[in-house]
Structure formats: structure tokens, C-alpha cells
Image (tube, rainbow, N blue to C red; front, side, top):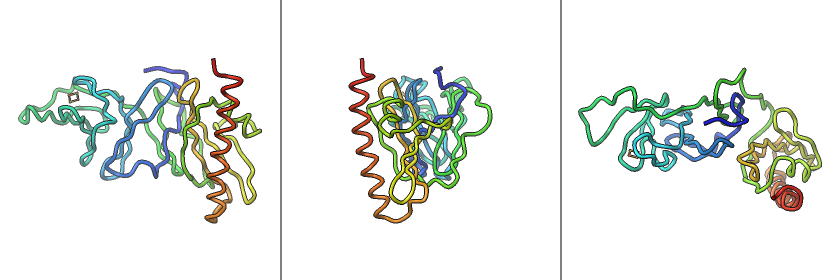
Length: 217
Ligand code: FES
């Protein structure tokens, strides 16, 4: 798996959207990953393909500190090694049975994944409070145009609101689709948070219109 984001951090989900003991699919330009959190709270990112017969591991389940495939129940550790093959309970799985894993970092309520070896850690988001994530059928340029702003080197577009700033942390999923993580700066009361949600949804519609007119092939 290789893409133009190899060697850099991609914000794939908000921490709140991945409770302990769960797995979810996340999309990056290079393809789909299984993002999961162990019962004790550690995050892991695995290729979304079981080495046995190719079932998507994001359809599987987490038990304790392992991710199990839904098809025949082979289970894998965070490091990718196979821990157990239910059809052969007495067998210690050989080291050669492994699922590919990727680096994961979690900070300031955001989970980041890197393919390859990035230099340094993900950008700091101190002072920003995660609100929600939503997918737009639009590329990053269309979203920046809809917001009337520029994307910062961290991949953030800022939108002024009545009481503070809405920060859109953008994560390209493919040519025509972007995951938007909405983070708030200085917005704390409930009414302002609801207004921020509405404002972001309206910005998404505008971005999708711009994308259709200017970028879609
Ligand atoms: S396909 Fe995953 S255990 Fe068989």
C-alpha cells in the first residue's frame, strides 16, 4: 500500500468515534484500513484484509487486546502477528501469518495514521475541541473555496462564527471525497455548538456544488 500520503500523518477519526473494544473502517487515498481500539484503550491500524481468505477485518470484532476476523475467527495482535486459529486450537500460529499494520497516534481527541515512517509527530491541535466528523463529496480545494479560506499546512481551514472559530481538519479520502473533522476554538455553549453543526453542513452542501461544477470529471 503506497500513496502520496506515505510518510505523513493522516487524521482518520475522532477519538470519541472509536470506543474501547470496537473496530471501524477508515478510508485513506491508498485504500481502506481497519482502525480498532483494544479493551484496555490502545489504538491500532491494520490492513483491511485478513491474510487467511481476504475478508475485511473492519467487519471483525475486538476481544481483549486482539482483533478477530468475522469469517473463521483468526485473531491478530496490535503488532499484526496471528494469535489464534480457532479451527486448530492447539496450534501456535507461525510468525509468517501476519496482517500489515501501520503507525497510529492519538492526541487532542484525533486519531492519526501514517503509512511508512513519518518524520516527527502529528500536528498539535491544542485548544481545539473536536465536535464531529462528516464526509463531503468534494475535494479539499472545493471545501476551501466554500469556506472562503485557505488550507493551513496542517490541513485546517478556519471559518469565523459568531462566538469563535470553526476549524475544519481535512483528510483526503480520494479524488472526490474528503473527511471533515470539525474542531471548535472558543465555542463552548450548546446553542453555539448546534449552530456550528448547521453551519458546517451548509458549507458541505456549498462545497459539493462547487466540486460538481468545477472539479468533477
Ligand atoms: S478469512 Fe479471515 S479467518 Fe478466514
